[in-house]
Image 1 (cartoon, rainbow, N blue to C red):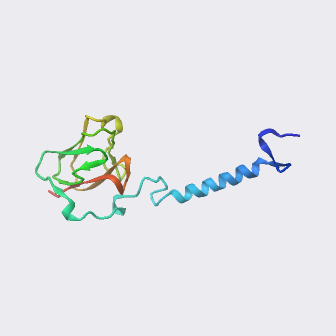
Image 2: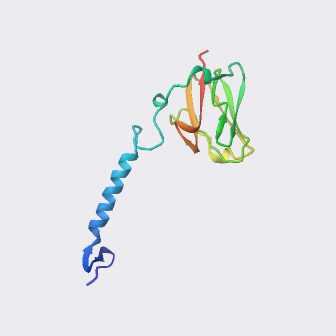
Image 3: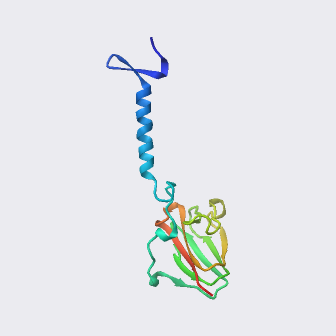
Length: 157
């Protein structure tokens, strides 16, 4: 009488599990559809244009320097928002106890720095040549718009 995994006994009745499995799948798909956003549902946030503006008073002007260091320490980037000149090498230095990474909010705007390259006591860098704004975050401790976030603004020449 039993059809194995395709049926279950509920209150003395045999009921095919197919209906239950189908209902579960439909519910899961509906939930996943609700979790996406305008960037195709990746859940990783949208383009930089979707982020709120940072007031000018919160930017640290570091133009004219060949190299700028940003400390990654216990879930913060310090300084968080920097203005640099074109061609500046930006170094992220992990001076904390936690692993970190650096993920551009706008995929492909610069090469991300993986966890393996930014463990405690290590440094990783990228050089920014083109004028523009480059928001980033640590995916271990933030989302693109909350938590451990930062921005680099490369000034016009």
